[in-house]
Image (cartoon, rainbow, N blue to C red; front, side):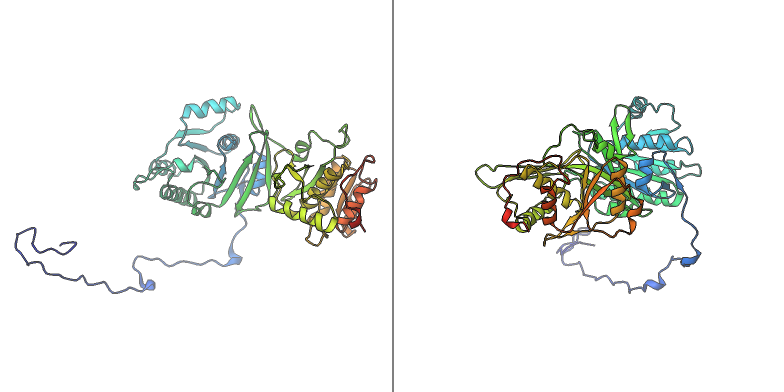
Length: 464
């Protein structure tokens, strides 16, 4: 057999003795008659049993994001920046789970002694958790594919695992896909909970193929800023629960500590009634993360523009929504901010994504521009439309109840129905507004200001 045309036979040396013999293609075979297949037994929807029992991790914030705990046979992918605390969180979780079920922590990056040193630093030395250092998927499968396999397995990290049947290096697309596929199939077959640590790229996405996130059941991102001591665990995919829940942790010398009330953490330097002086450009926003209300401080600074284009700097919020809010303030409210430098910051490092923060950002910008402080005991929330209207937002009563519980006395919110107001604190004074013009008029009045102040730069001709 010769792969290309040749005039001389390599075996006998004769010339012009090679004859082309085309290979006959095998006749196509119908898929329905494929050999080796087995008949699938469908199950009726009404015959499916109750939900699978969940195994709580002992960390309430992690259980909240997971939807109530770990499900047997599930695969959870945890991603985050280097040094953010992924390994610390999972080590604390398996050490808490080790009291009730056998757990195994497999590291492809660290030696067993390094993991022991970290556990000793976190005060987890006496936990009943098995440790191993391995990167060959074949060895890991042989260890786990047994009757007495552990109930929870941590793989740290999936980018260090490799399958010896592939020639590519660990961390490549082929290796990550093949390694994750083998481990996930084993978890489904044996009914063990699999926790995978994933590296992220410089863009913040989990490294490797995008199909990796499709293969697992839950995808969690561990977010945070090295300049702040708190961390946010956020779910972007969850087949067993909601994807809009967050878990809040505080990084300490003894590991990650749960924060049951994030509002107190984000408002630690500005508690209701405890601030000595009100500052223009500072507003408390009553946000919502899943089913949890979170109060954070939104700060704005409007300054004179240096020669050139005005600067817009945003930290913790969407820059496109800031541009929209500024356009509405200029067109509908007559606030001359188009030629000013504007800096907007969500204090504490939290990233706010919901449109309900529009009104808080607008109030902070107007407060800074006009020099009108907003009282420290007032919260603001609402969505702004392009025509200047303030739209209602979900879970208004839940936001107001959280503000009243933390001691806030006033609220600036969109107009709403009065049906659910019975359960609110009667001491909470609510200012209902319907447009940006109502917000400007409210800031001019004494309802949300601690004292009168000079307000330069206002185009009074645009007021009603």
